[in-house]
Image (cartoon, rainbow over all chains, first blue to last red; front, top):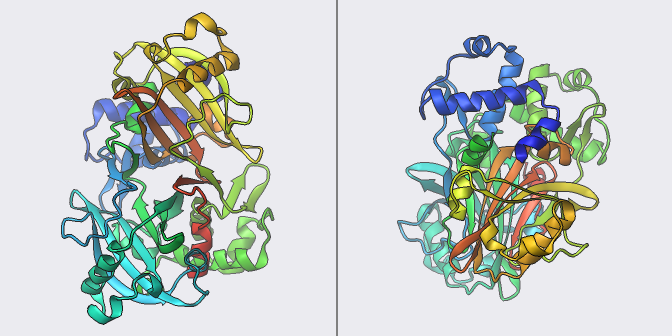
Length: 254
Length: 254
């Protein structure tokens, strides 16, 4: 059915090449294998290099290929499902937590975050920096903005900075009874600091997950997390075990 | 605080240019305004055209710019929040539904969908094609896969094809009591048929939302929906009213 519709739509050359390349990846290459260089590939498929490059970009968007400096273009492993669940806010501070705190500072929240938190523009808030790792690889970097009013007991009892301070702050947050969370997901490009943590170049595509934590009818914290778009599939939901890979579907459908 | 970290990281030239351009967009341009051509822009900022192009690509990823054939590069309006809520499965078939059915056919489900549905590979299922519009613009295109066993009463009572058939099938689905939904979000590139519906070129970045609908402990339907990544911010959650725009944050933070 999809096929019929596809045939009736005019396909650009790079799109057709993408489909052909995708099939070649399935049949002729293993995960991690380095692809031939662009010149050889273009010759093999009888296309211009500009066309080839467009097709490679599509496959990179879909998570089929990885391009790294000094390594070249390799066949990517399937994307990793990363749970962005409502129940898990990851504030218990346990060492086996997916999110590891790396820093805790004080700074002005970006204007839109300040508005959501109900603090004045320029007013300083706590800022916790956390990194999320899956299978030994950093998949996401987060800035968590917490106004002083959300953690009134903090300053008295905890370390002044660093991961210890961050854990102390998260413990305080953990004591709050949350009413719920609002969340949004959108495409973005990695900031230089996030890109470094995620082993990507600045500007690499990321999925930006913004979460507003609600307690007693007000926003007690706002998190802005950037997930690697090349390797992550964000999962939401009731059983938390979604085993459907879009890539695999595309492959079989095409 | 972010600033301190940023300064300690080496920034590529296009990244710096992106920040400068972003500020220029805020101060000198209105939404919808056409940007000068690449040659003039490169001259104005004293950079090579390749650098300029990279910076423009970043801004396009972040939804700040739109590039359209025959129009040029324009300043994009803020992204539209599109609710991907757990409660709303949109199967009531009302005319004011966000999703409008356009077709209903029968076909083999992609292998991964077939597995999730518990049907044999190659076994045909109902396939409903729907388009979601927001503010008069198509923002998402969906294929909804439904095995015959999920809608046993369908064939007897409804039209043979087209939107009427689709509405009949959705009404049948609506009668099922759902236990829950599993959902994943990942980056993808638009298939030719989806691209046409969404007024984009094939291969344009899209957010692919795959949803598994569960009833009586089995999967009764699987939906694969592609959302325009340039104009959409997907929202999830309890109040459904997340008003934080990542773009605006980036703008103020940089």
